[in-house]
Length: 450
Image 1 (cartoon, rainbow, N blue to C red):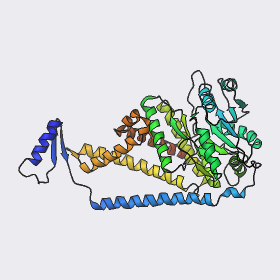
Image 2 (image 1 turned 45 degrees about the vertical axis):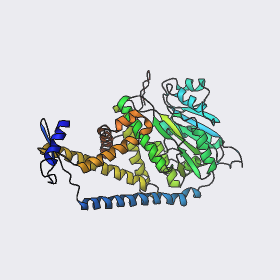
Image 3 (image 1 turned 180 degrees about the vertical axis):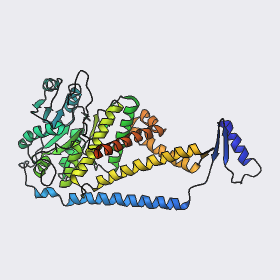
Image 4 (image 1 turned 120 degrees about the vertical axis):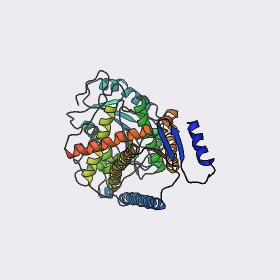
């Protein structure tokens, strides 16, 4: 390569006419590579700039529409469902852990709760249709246990059963943490979340910022990089959340009671339910419910949780299909409103990204096959380098392994194509009215019949 570069340099600049606009020509075995130093036409820059302005204005408009719900909340129409909290008293914190075959992961979750700098007042494990020893593990570690009865509505049904029994015992400003039984909280999660909601009584919910556990090789690193960038995005939005993650979110008791009261009238679902049993992504649906009612939500930087990553491509495919299918179905249930406008914009943006990225790489591939010479364009090389630097340093907190996976670009581009194939598959399933699959990670020694 060094010899090829020196040969090209001499041929262009030491041939007696250094100002001739001839391209640099690199000759390597089997290839002739030309460097074209022409930049794109100015009208393309103008078109790109106009497009950027239009997209930015659209994003600002959608954010503004969402803010209208907070200024004029629908929840003001609802009566108070819980008695008021006494002035100057600390809120009670109740943790609810829905658990389906989680005997293997539950001990780490409960240990994380025991290590909280602000310990919870109650921990309730909702044992749901388990074929393992989840109930015995929960009791042995000192948690309260509620065993669901006749639940056919999966996680949402389990949460509805236990929350309808817990909420009447609470006051308005008491707090309920709903977390997965395979999640380990940062030791300061509850302290930070309680402080945030105590300092600002207008905040109705605090969502956790999740990052992935270790392991699972390259696939695991893809997911960890994805979660790192999501955390950075939320921080840049000053804590404004897209979705209150089901891994761990803290709610005011009155907020959950308002959702139950609004179901069947202001919100989709069955009256009295907190989670919509028809939704396959209950956390996404509850986020839309809270935004529809005009609730305020945030994700403080200190409220982080470690959650389980998908160990195989098949498991990841199933998980992401459920997430994407649930998001689209939830938007269909709520329709286009000021609360959902931004989410509709995200889905249209994702659809455009699938078309644009696929078309771009198909055209590049066709051009490469059609050309008898390889053309290097310094302008686009510089743009690519800037993009590579951005992708690398946005995962810097993940360590050297995260940066090494991000730097070559091609690895994460392949992962992006995988996620886009998930989106296309979901659209096909919806068009063909196929039933969505939930999907669970298979634990050792457990036969999951759900």
